[in-house]
Image 1 (cartoon, rainbow, N blue to C red):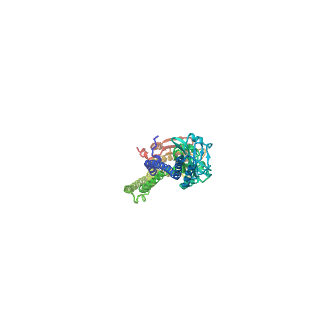
Image 2 (tube, one colour):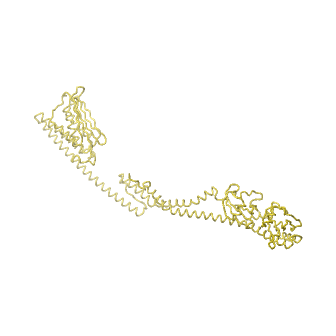
Image 3 (cartoon, rainbow, N blue to C red):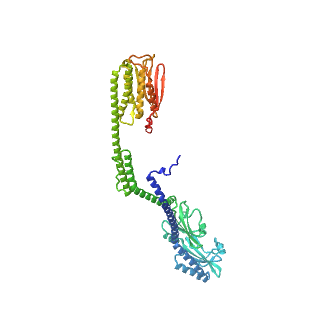
Length: 577
C-alpha cells in the first residue's frame, strides 16, 4: 500500500492558498500578538502609574493640611516652652495662634504629668489616665488621632500631636485640632467620581474618605487585608475584592512618612467583563489583521488567477465532453501569463479538432471502402450461389444434387455474413444473434418442409462479436443445423423437435446449442448417412473460435454444445494468427 500524499486532503487551490498564506502570515501574527501583549502590559503599567499619581495628587491638599498642622504643633510646642508651659502667657500664645488660623479649633500643650494648663482658655485638663498616655511617655512619637467629638472642642476633629523635647529630654506634648469637615471637603474637592480616597494612620484609623460622612467605608477597603497591614507594605498597586465583593484596583501612597498613608481605588478592569475585554483586546487585533490579510490576498488571487483558471477549467471540461463549439477560452482582463496559456489551449483545441475531423473523414472513407468490399464479396458469393443453383438443376444424380446443395448452403452463409457486415452500423462488431437467426431460418426452411409438424425452438441472446469470430460461428451454426435436419427423427414419446440457442453466459462467455430429436423417419425430410465432412468442419470451426465442443448422442436426442470466450480488442487478430 502506497503512502497517501501529504497534500491529498488539500487538493483545492483555494484551500492550499489559504493554508500557505496562513503559514506565511504566522510570523507576522506572532509578532503582532507579542507587540499587542506588550502594549496591553504597558497600558496596565501606565494605568497603575496613573492611579498612583492621581491618588497622590488628589490627597495633596490633605497632605498640605496635615503637614501644616504638624509644623504648627511643633512651633506651638516650642512657644509653650518659652512661655513656661503654663499660665496666662502660654494661654495667650495659643489664643493668638487660633485667631490667626481660624481653620483650627484647638491648640494646647500637655506636660509630661498629663496636666494641660496651656490652652486657648483658662480651662485645664488631665490626660494622665487617658488611653495611650503611658505608651506615649515610654515611646514618644508624633500621632494623628481622629475623634468624633473632641474632649475640649466638642466636635469631630483630627488631632495632630507632636512630642516636645529640650536638650533631648521629653518636656510634653503639643497638640492642635483640625475640624474633620475641613479635611473631608478638601479631599472630596480634589477627586472625580471614579477615584475614591481614604487616609489612615499606622494603627488603621481612618482619618478621612471621599464618601459622605457616616457612609460605610467598606467599598473603599480591601477585604483580604487590614489597613494596619497595608501601612507597613510601603506603596504600590494591587487588585483585590472590596468589602462588597467587587474587584477594585487599589493604589497605596505614603502621604506622611510613618504617620499617614492614602489608599486610592477605582473599579478594576479585571472584573469578568473587563477581563474578557482585556483578553479580546489582547488577541482580537492579530485575528482581525489575519482575516483582513487573508481576505485581501484571496480576493486578489481570485481576481487575478483563480477566476481565469476556473473559466479555463470549465472550457476544458466542455472540450473533454466533446463540445468543441464552446471549448474556446476567452479570458477577460487576465494577466499576460494566463492569457498566453489560454491562447496556447485555444490553438491546441483548434489543432485537435482539425486532426479529429481529418481522422473522422479518413475513417468514414475507409468504412465506405470496407462496406464496398463486403458488398462486392456478398454479390460475388450470390453469383456463385446462382451458378450452383444452375448446376444443381442440371445435376444427373441425387448424390450430386445433395453435395451441391451443401456447398450452396455454405456459400449462402458466407454471403449472409458479408451482408450483415456492410449493413451494420459498426464494422468492428457483428450482431451475431441476427446473423444466426438468418442462417438458421434459411437452413431450416430448406431442410424441413412446412407440413412435417416439426417443432422448432429458437433463442438468440443479443451478442456482438468480432468478425474473426462471427464468420466461423455462422459457418459452425450452418453445419450444425444442417446436421440436425439430416438426422432429425420422430421420437416415440412426442413430435420431432429442433432447438437452436445462442446464450450469453456473462463475463464474455458465449454458448451455442443445436439439438434434434431422433427416431423414425419423417415424411418429406431427406435423411443422409453423410461422409463425415460436416463433423470435421464443425470441429475446425470450434478450433477457430478457441472454444470447446461437447456432443451428446442418446437414443432420442442428439445435441451439439459449443462454449467459447468472446474476443476483446486486445485479442484482435489472435484467431487469425
